[in-house]
Image: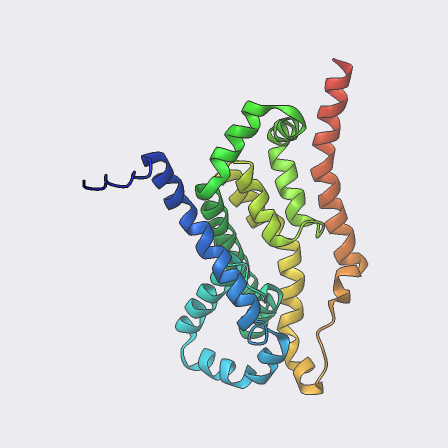
Length: 247
């Protein structure tokens, strides 16, 4: 007697597995990068290869810009170590301007790719399950929906949430791609300006064998504007909460 054919996976199961492929690729790349690329994407590696990088930039400026953008997008999209070093490199190679524009473009594109991969994997389905089940998580999702612009912006401006988590959390909660992209591009401007400025002065740092000074973030002319942006982001949420309480 012949054995019956083994049961085939349901079409929905097949679609779920296909949706998970981008997420699995990102996780695998992140794990491999953390193990094998940590030393290659470090400040010491930048110092070691600085002359080669400058020579390539001077000889092939357009290709250098393209290669830098691709590398930055990959670092962010695959959550590889070295995002800070990449931002410093943008300032070192291209100056404050247009270096900060290249840094903003690379960080935003990489964040959007990671967001899309995570949302395609399980973001939309997870959000639907949260809404169906209700409870505290559903109320948190509803609160986020009411204050989506402000929360997404604050996640970028403040360093409380790590950058890669600020890419994943909105995807898992199925927030708007447009709002995610806009708040990412605008919210990372202050930090990108400071780090690119530090990177543009790395020539003197390399000459003395020192380390970059990140104390610039604590200078009043940097810190106070960032705190002002945080206050502007919080204020609309406070006003809406007070109005709901009055009603």
